[in-house]
Length: 446
Image (cartoon, rainbow, N blue to C red; front, side, top):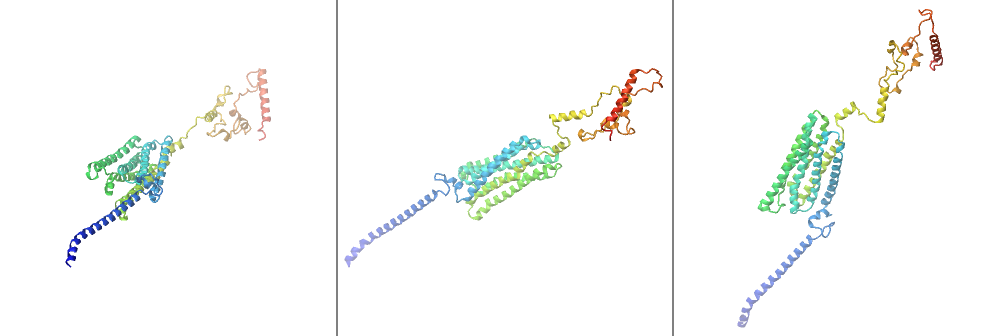
């Protein structure tokens, strides 16, 4: 019994540490194996290329080609069509400048081209929203989002102001002044965004070098100036509907519809971006699609409601030009016009072959051309001398129509008792000619 106690005493302290060490080492191995499997699965999940993308493509651009992420591919297709359409409209706008007859419409071409450049920028910025966030994409989003919208809304505002002059005075400021004001209003947004980026990225210690570390509310608050441009343009366009020259009112309607739809789009995307995405449950995933959809929808609204209607009205003549063309038709300078003028002038040239021997009383006849009223000669009935001679002598005497020298009275009754042979011969020939003409006239049967 004592021997058992002596042998059991020194063995208990040596066995307990060995068991504890064995258990600890086993748990460590299990934890290490779990951690290794976790990191392996995580790395494998991160390096998995989505369907539709290439093997060597950077993960930032997976949304551009991932077939499982449908919104990226759909927005790319719509955006590409918008870029092509904007470019074509820009070419059409510039090419139609020589054909614009109204100088007041031509003065707005520069501002409208500037507007189209801003619209193209909005379409291009959609690709920046589809790409995942990093330093360059976040900085460009924050700077260009407000700038491109400021360009478009500034152009609409200055156009609305120009229309207020046109509907009341039918004249407006110079085109260079309008374009300069639009550029100046856009530069205000450039200054605001530059200061905001400097303050939030360079000066703030918590966000140094992290342009993506910005709250959604702060992003929206930085766009207050753009919202002011929307409200100012909308308020300025309404008075343009009340003016004396009503043919300019249609342009004000285009601006009002464009700004109204833009305001609706902005209200929707701001509510979704600030509140709606958090309610949905995954705000980080839906933030980029919300901004991209807002860009695409607003850019297409600019094209359909403003640019296309404005281009359709550029080459149409104004109301004053249409009136002038109706009252004062243009005269050609061709060969046919010269012939017509010479023909019309020759109608008034009288035949003076027999005017040398006409008496004074014969200078007051009723000419068959006296009733000429400016019509074409072939369409007016003009009686000839022979036709008038065959009429009733009581209507118009022969002496008035064809003045002629009258012979003296009978030689016996005259004071001269001598009859010259040449006088008798001339009188006989004249009598014979008159009888022959009367018998051979084609109008005698009438």
